[in-house]
Image 1 (tube, rainbow, N blue to C red):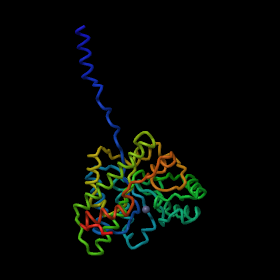
Image 2 (cartoon, rainbow, N blue to C red; image 1 turned 180 degrees about the horizontal axis):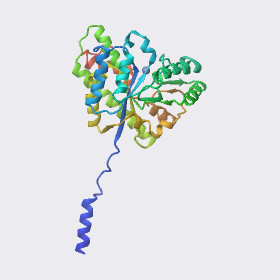
Image 3 (cartoon, rainbow, N blue to C red; image 1 turned 60 degrees about the vertical axis):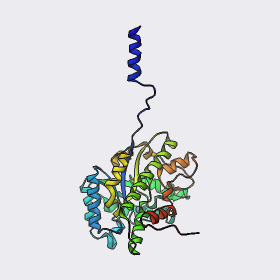
Length: 316
Ligand SMILES: [Zn+2]
């Protein structure tokens, strides 16, 4: 009897019934769009590339993906762009297709769109660390035109190109634009507040979309965070990655992210646009909002004005 009681006590302590199951780890990869992107408010293009590369290395991010918009190479800001892109891939990161002209599918024909994709593929052919992934500019997959949506889906598949979708979006492009506008207007920026706002917004995006994904899929998928090749990334990547890890995120490779089963989904929604999680939630009938509130530029702009510029909101 005593033995039984002892065994019971031992078992109770070894497997306490109240112990919460270990939470599923949250996993996310990083992607950077519009490479080579227009200059930001703070850095020369070479400094920006150096900053992003040293930031990724300092944060021990093994493999991010850079989506190249080859038409940008013909613009003034594209000078030296090829060398900078090769520096990314030379450091072990991936390069993939973000079209040549960065057009909205909803605004041009499927034929013209695919021709534009092919121009970028031509440039990317045989580049080291290339991947056959296509990221839709503006995440515009044809919106309400289902025939066009399907024509491009078919065209991409025929070319062996997979959709380089995103699962989380914090509208970093807008924050970058706000810093450029502030610089142009000669407004001083609180750089510590800017770093905190950037980090908090991107971590918030990851968590918002993970919550939506869990409600949609019943699990946490491997995520792909949408970022752009910005000065903000060059300045704040180590802080962002540190905050993500502190919040329970594991940084994974882009290859691993796109091995998730959601990579094979083909969501059918009234309008094809946005993150893959938004589309899958919509398809499943989850109510709006299916997007992170700071993707609303009005909300994002007010936060920036208050916290980075120290401006009080305008009265009624
Ligand atoms: Zn883009």
